[in-house]
Image 1: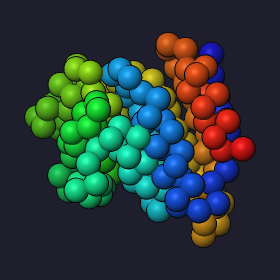
Image 2: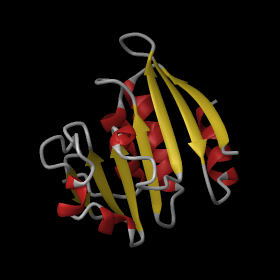
Image 3: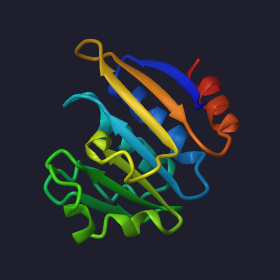
Image 4: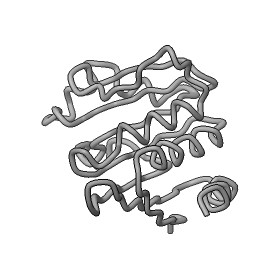
Length: 159
């Protein structure tokens, strides 16, 4: 049974801050799944993860809709993946998707629900729901190793 956390974000900078807290607290290989409708804040959240991983501000963190995978150097390497345009998961092996999960990287995957379930085991599953123009509901599911410290950091820094 995963540890879970539910958070409401009322503006994009708060969403970015949630991602930053996650990034600051990652010290090892982590696979993060993000799901939510278009415009729900997935890329904004990943911008925060990049900030938390000390990715240089010279890098503009944008959704890799057409390139599929963007890589950013930081305290840990961040791979930002967007599967929106992928209809056949077998295409991913041609672009090195499997290899980015092998090393001590943080891999954040937008539209992760487009991967076959047996494909990848995610450590953190984040589901984002649009409430209104500025409000988003985040559901976090933490799998595998214990994330008690991360969950406590999120609770303490947002309330």
